Length: 219
Ligand code: HEC
Image 1 (cartoon, rainbow, N blue to C red):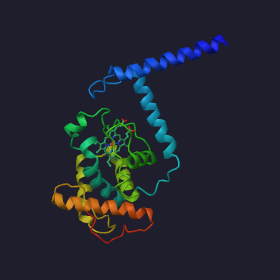
Image 2 (spheres, rainbow, N blue to C red):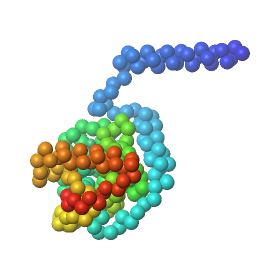
Image 3 (tube, rainbow, N blue to C red):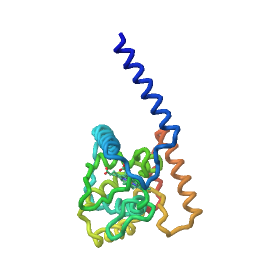
Image 4 (cartoon, rainbow, N blue to C red):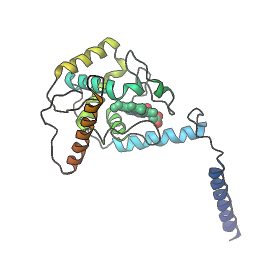
């Protein structure tokens, strides 16, 4: 009995010390101070396992056709390159200051499989700079980005630019109907596009398919 009592007292002491530690302000939350080795291991392993388990149930569609890959190249340039970099361009200074740093998807990338990339892109990663694109984009659009990323590690700058130009000339077809602001329209238009996106998300709940609205594809 006294053994159980000592364990209980120990747990209470640890709990009080932990709460006192939180309130003391001792922990430094600065993005410039890296985690200790053990914290890093806990966070990284939790992330990898969490994604692996959830991505297992995802069925990967055909992501090997050229049209899908080029549309993905264009979307990647608009939505992801500022943080993750792109062939021929480094990430922005914002990405430089993030902790954890957004990985560069070049040659040495650990390469999660397509289902994992899709899950991460759709859902984002808590407490990091990685946003969830699911609330604002259709699955179909996100698979295009995954299709492109599948080819990205070996891609040259010339190939990348060619794919993006192809996507631009493809024009209408899937009626995605919004742009991500690469400078060829005004800010006001951008706001309208985002309202449209919001409506799209709301409609999804009612199971109405309005994706093929015939608008020009400007992704
Ligand atoms: C605002 C910056 C930002 C943007 C924009 C962004 N990401 Fe990320 N992304 C991050 C950060 C930060 C991480 C690292 C998270 C970590 O290590 O815990 C990350 C991680 C990832 C990972 C996991 C990499 C790995 O090693 O497992 C994938 C995949 C990814 N991002 C895909 C994308 C895609 C696709 C887009 C565009 C549709 C995108 N990201 C846009 C910041 C960003």
